[in-house]
Amino acid sequence: MLPYADEPQPSARRFPAVTLAIIAVCIAVFAQEVSLGPEEVQAFGERWGFIPDEFWAGRGLVTLVTSLFLHGGLLHIAGNMLFLWVFGDNVEDQLGHGTFALFYLASGVVANIVFAVAFPDSIQPLVGASGAIAGVLAAYLLLFPRAMVRTLLAFGPFITLGRVSAAILIGFWFLLQVIQGAISVLPIAPGSDVAFLAHVGGFVFGLIATGTIREVRDQSLGDWSGRRWWSRSFRNWLLVAVVVTVLLAGSQLLFTGGEAATGTLARLTVGAGVVALALLDGVARLLGRRGILGTGPRTNKLVALAQILAALGLAGTMFTG
Image 1 (cartoon, rainbow, N blue to C red):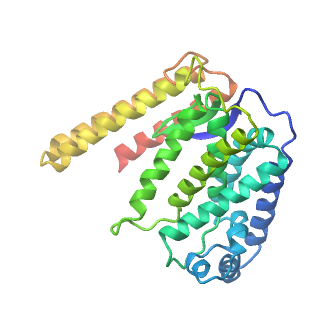
Image 2 (cartoon, one colour):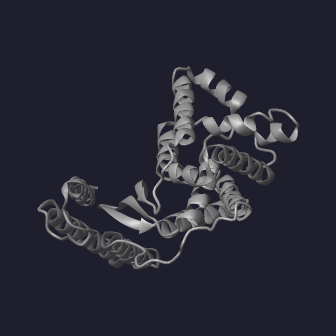
Image 3 (cartoon, one colour):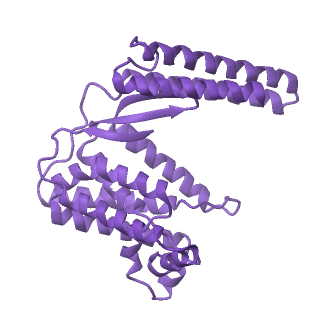
């Protein structure tokens, strides 16, 4: 699920100066990183990234903040800035420019400290705005729980556009962070470049801080009432994802349980069904008809075409691999 726009009520009235300034600084810093050589990039990250081992030794305290403006790659900064663009402007509108700026930085600082508590001996620089943005997501959840978020949905070859409430989207995101964060502290956990516990820390701080700010100002939080939690396309996409996952898991159990031939046949059958369904739905949407995953307005037709190509690619992999 990749959000690209939102429909909060009320919509933002203030110009999101702080949100845009943060995005601009992050892009400028990333441009500086890109201009450096491999060794210089590593030195830059070690100088301005947050290193728990250094923090507990009383060194590099400024990196609690500077690390929030560094990123480890194009996808890293693109994802973070997209989330900040979608959700940050409305939170800034509700909190005010100055309060939002402090809230954002504090969320990031708390996220870094939580990570340092969990991994005190880590010598790898922690970089990225994810912890601070987690706080922004928490604030958005409390302020606009029933706002509809426009989202690009992808599962295997199934690709569509849908609308889902902030409560479901952000709640699902946080659940993933908690699960993956818990796994990350296990002795047998595989290494990961994602600081899930930092996200959890920033999110929990965001919930507490937002609730406190609204209470001090004698302002209410968002209204959880509403008629719809999601659009038809999101509901159907979710159902397809669940059914396909269950069928694939069942075929894998057959394969690993000693029924190799049956399991292989089951996987091929499920794969063929997935390809056929994705092609039929994609063609229907491309022709402007009401497919399983939505209708066919101009933007969704492009997404439907992408689904058709993905299904054909999957079919080619199945029969040539």
